[in-house]
Amino acid sequence: MQRLAIWVFALALPGCAGQGYSNTHRPHVDMAVHPAWYDGERIYYITTDVSDRDMAEMMQANYAPRLRDAIPDYPKPPQVRTVLERVYRVRNVDQPSIFPSAPKPLGSQSVNIQYSPLWLMYEVVWKTGVAPVELKSEEQIFVAESQGKLEIHRTDIVVNCPVVRYQGKRIDRYEW
Image 1: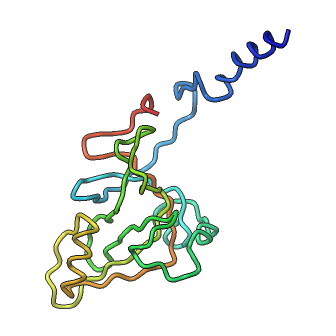
Image 2: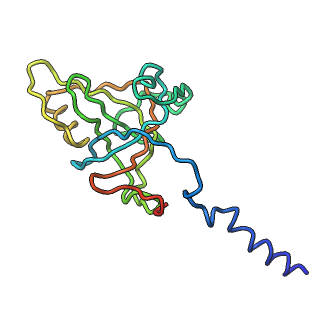
Image 3: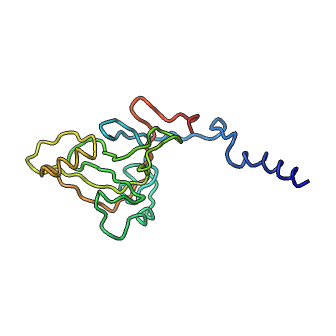
């Protein structure tokens, strides 16, 4: 009898764990994707939540002030890793944001352990008199900063922005 109970439990368990999960019968939501750069490669992300009310409105995202609770008490230099990754927004030039990590490959098989969809925003500001170039990687930002061409300013804005696509490649619902 005990073996029968274990067998029935074992058969029922996969259903609870998501086996048979299908997007076919689930409601879908259309969301805008935003372009960004990661290591010179064009990626796309969605923004679901922002800790700053004005930015949440601008990005048409949920205002989620508790995201600020993820910021460490100490000043977080760009090289220190926490659950928050950095995202760079160029303030005085119109260009896509720069992400220092992304899932590789997209979906459940990602091996990039540095990736997190929670981002602490850093603002990049080109100095007066410097001819800006489009920045496509974190390394380019650090090089330009070391050359005195720009400044990096940490903000207290936390955003939830999962990366959902590389140029020409997308997460397919069946890859999950």
